[in-house]
Length: 106
Image (cartoon, rainbow, N blue to C red):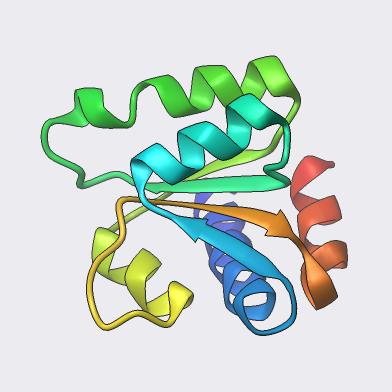
């Protein structure tokens, strides 16, 4: 189930980068959550040290935003369409990914 959610989140990020708006990086994602603009948050399991992303699931739960852990920074970077790894990504405007984000809220 978690793997399924991770794939859905990556797909949503890919769609949103083309038709909506995303924020990349731990600081940007944290700001999006605090401001209440984040619709979906994804962070990489392989971030070192892990403390860098530990606050994201807690903050997302507090704000009622789905938060998904994906297996690697590289996977997240590819989904964002950047040529490097990404530790965390937030969708702030879903665009055509609205349905995918709603499924993850379910």
